[in-house]
Length: 405
Image 1 (cartoon, rainbow, N blue to C red):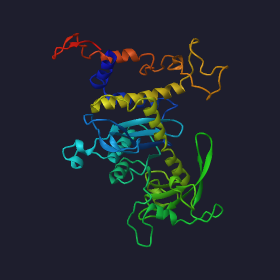
Image 2 (cartoon, one colour; image 1 turned 90 degrees about the vertical axis):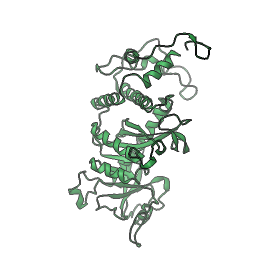
Image 3 (cartoon, rainbow, N blue to C red; image 1 turned 135 degrees about the vertical axis):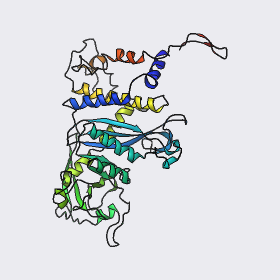
Image 4 (cartoon, one colour; image 1 turned 60 degrees about the horizontal axis):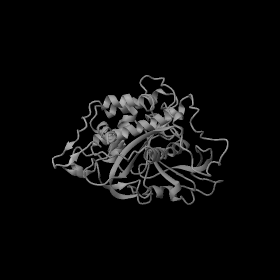
């Protein structure tokens, strides 16, 4: 079909640069007051994998795919998201290339681990003007020295989860794992909390939860050290596995001597818990870019085309925020009513589709920002102008009749 051919050419061959498009998208996010970053937010790091068949697609390989919860053939992309709990949006993305794609496997100078890619993306986020209080990541990144070193060299603070049973060197009489350090903290009950401090967590739906947090000691970690071990949990007595965090951070303790010389402002326990509590927003963004916007639904094979597809999905995500905050415009009176005064209550039947008249209304106030329904066709046409002409009907080399699809 001509439309499919044009889309393939647009992703694979047309003359546009991924980085220029993404840079412009981030520039627009910075300029809008509703989405502008500030130093109270975080840059969240994670990676997500999707199954892809075959071996011909760039970056494909048999590897752990978190979305499926198993090892399978697929593509994994390392991503960063900026969020403050009110808004959240993707910053950068880099597909991970498995070692077997390189001549010398993991020893090849061009090979990069996921933590190395993630650290580079976090640095790019800072350089792009997305200030943050800390870089936040799960325990998959806390095992890489390269990750820590890159963030420190860039002057970035971090709050990263530790694997609770991962051991470290310490005297025989002292804790050797994060969970040992947590059990060593004193606790009797809420009236006599010992080493623990109550922390109130506020959620977007309005409800609150009381957690408990404490600075623990483990090897070189401690409240008076450049790197702290903070434990946060719903129950200090039992330390439930799914509701207990073991966090490493280089944000200094307010009373530590090193706070005076640290490049980062000090942080109390409540702030450490707040910062790591923002990490799930990257999971929310994955649900939306994948389930709603088709992040993994590409049918191209080259690395260039895959990156272009991902960039366009991120643009669509940002357009959604732009429209969410846009002032209301004129509504087409012929469009169906989303909330009719008569009819079944919400949940009693299928939800009607959103009328297109409510999407991307009005002319843009910025001459360089094209609304999705306004200028997209001439923009795409200008990039599509250099595509190869469709083949004329006629016999192919096997003598079969060829037609346009």
